[in-house]
Each structure stands twice: as C-alpha cells, then as structure tokens.
Length: 204
Image (cartoon, rainbow, N blue to C red; front, side):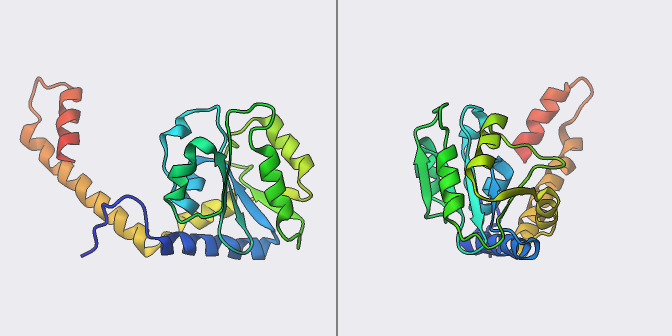
C-alpha cells in the first residue's frame, strides 16, 4: 500500500511535469521558462527550504525546451537542492547586491539553443517576480531573447492534477474529515477558539 503522507513525489512525477511544460513551450514557441517563486520552483524540483522566508535571496529555476531543469540558487541551498532530482545546480554566494545571480541566469539562458528567441516567465495575473525589479530589467537586456508572460499557461498546467497529486489530496481530505468529526466530542461551552484549534491540530 502506498504511503501518500510521505513528503514530496517520486522523480517520475517531476519528469512528467517538466514534459508537460515543455509541450507548452513547443506550442508557444519558447526556448525556456524561468521561475523565481517557491510554488513554481517546488513544482518542478521538489525543493523545500525555509530560506524562502528571507527576501534577500533570489532563487531561479530554468526549464529548457529539452532536458532537465537547471537550478541557479544561493550556495546556502546547494545541499538541499542536491537532494532533489536536479543535477545541474549552479550557485553563488548570496546576498551579493552587485550581481545576485543575474549574470549566471543570463549565461544559462544564452547558452540554450535559440530556436525562437523567447523565454517564458510568470509576469501576469496572480504572480510576482520575487526578485528586484531592477534585476529583472537588467536580465532582459543581458539575455538575447524576448521575455513573454506564461502565467495563464502555468495556471492551466497546475490545475490539471496527476494521479499522484489526486491521491495525496484524497488522503489529506480524509485526515481533515477525521479532525472535524472529532470536534463535537471535545468542544464545550466556555472553551476558547484557541483551545479548540489546539485539540483539532493534535487530532490532525
């Protein structure tokens, strides 16, 4: 029996996600996509770290039109990323305000085959860059490709769940239902919401 409570997914799940993104790139005539936020970086790599809470360090993952993703990250996250399925990991000693990974990102993007001269990035609705705007503007001048918005395409990719995602979601819902079903057993008049919430979390 599968244990769907294990953190993360098998490598095959990330390979499948990458392949689906590459199908989008083929349809939209893109040479690569670049991601800078925790949800999207984790979606393609499985990388998990508390360093996302630090706004001083940018993190980059490039998904090329062919092949595995490329991680360009602060060296403080190298060991964590090495535990994922990513093997092309480029680091720098962040924070480094004069060049916080930008030249490395530009070099990686410029080294990819230039079939269409276009790079996708989440620039539109319900998105943010999580890097200084000045750095992004600088990047667009250093890369010999045009940047185009793929926010909607990423929404569509992530809305369609794989079987592995569905099974995890089903198990999470089952556990949540158990927690809610126990509330009437201990919730009494005079208890604070905090006390009820504490017991609810214990049961979860």
